[in-house]
Image 1 (cartoon, rainbow, N blue to C red):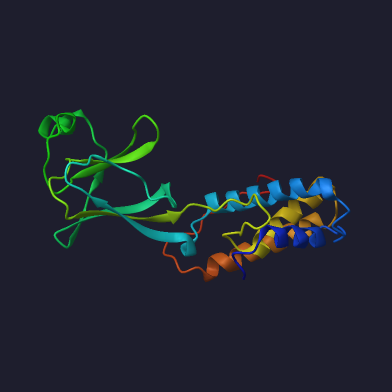
Image 2 (cartoon, rainbow, N blue to C red):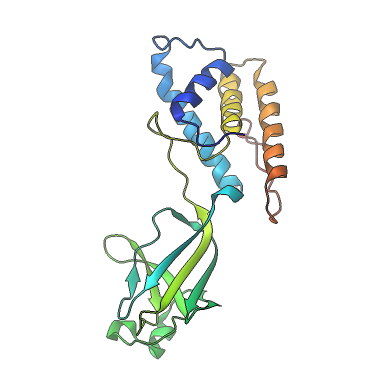
Length: 220
């Protein structure tokens, strides 16, 4: 298993798996298509499964009088597992979802402050999405911890590196490209890709159940 493989290397190996020449002057127009296929395959695999090696912990320091905070840059906010508040050295649960009934107790619009924070949410504050905490803190000893999945790095430039297993990405991409060409090798590549996926999932250290992903090639 190899992760962090450069896109340039993925393209070369995809050429080999689909029977293309490695001559850089041949099939230049096809390279951009290969890039898009490889990137999309990785994105779909990322979306369809939990990958333990991409689980991260990120934190935000809360400050007296500050209502909104920037999100951790590399955290996927669609795949947050747990959020906890550290207050006076103790971790405690904190709910997501702030509504008008909450503001009736501590009106953030009037700069009402209290600690510890009891809820958090995501708001668009005019320019970007930010994290809102409620009530607004009245001290500087709180820390908000997020446990979830790291954002997927893009595969755009040839120097970009894949976050997922290179063989898995290449095999699924090969199966798709060969299927378009109606090559008899397409099914073999697809079976290899499925076997690789099962191996990776079996070796993953996770308590979450395996989710059955539809075939990237057939959609079934």
